[in-house]
Image (cartoon, rainbow, N blue to C red; front, side):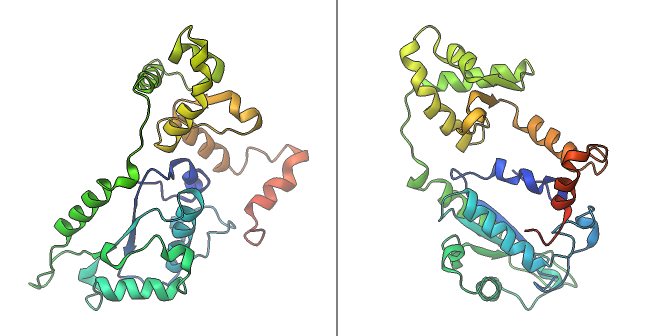
Length: 259
């Protein structure tokens, strides 16, 4: 899936980041890491992202993957716009990334020189090597890796069918108690498995479930509905102006230095 690039979606990205996935990090080769990103990318003035460079975003994405996924989740680097910057090849791009992350041993675990590709359109009768087939091969090899294999009870497949049926009826959220009945019927001995079921389907992006405090009582069935709702809250600069008790929290949220 392609994560939303607008500033308002940044707080929701962790919903989509999973240990059961690999990632393509796309870099515009026509830009340098020290060049500031067009302000139109982040329309909310005063946020921590407003003055970021392309290099800042590179670090942001790698750190996000490292934080919310496995500490060695595979990242494929894809450099685009090679036709606008012919000095780059996969090796020079990879070297520049290592320089920029200062050879950080934690972030470097996600990278591999063999997983770095550069792409572009032909221009001025100059042919650019087609790396798409190599990229596809790389993705296929990662997808077939043994790291994704996980043995699960076949009866859990029934739970996925339940999730699908709930989405068809436009059910946005469901209590864990109700979901236990839908997935396992009257077989209450199976109810204790639901926590493991939800962890698996949370990891692969089917549902959203947090096993923490009061959050553990509810399962979000429609993830996109949740993200859209959350985006509407954080993207509206006027919705809390008249609520005095949280006004300072809202101001702190927009302060770029508080992070």
